[in-house]
Amino acid sequence: MVQNFITKERIIWKNIIERSPWWGRFYERLVRSVKESLHKILGVALLSFEEITAILTEIETDLNLRPLRYVYEENDESRPLTPMHFLNFGQNQPTYPVRFAEILENMLLQNHLF
Image 1: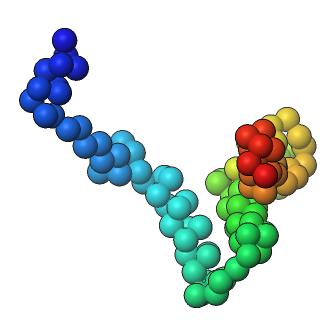
Image 2: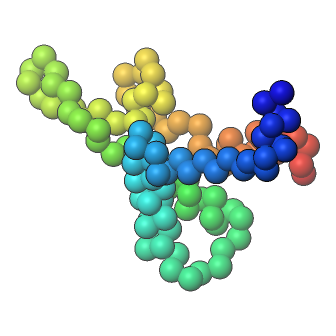
């Protein structure tokens, strides 16, 4: 019934998430960080798929190692808390997470795109 009314009245929904007051700021800042990094590294260079994957992996690692805040240990020594700690939850020493290249490779293998 509602769908028929919407169709009859030719109502078109336009969701502009980035203009919503509760969305956009955090992830848009991260997207901007990736774009700025790519612009500084590449300029106007043309790269192969492997080269751009390697660069995106490095940018991903840098962003995931940025400190969110500092945690103080028993001896009053501060240790940075990074997104990597959440990606590798339960590990004492953060290591590199599953990377963009590995995720893409798994997706391609699962979908048999090669």
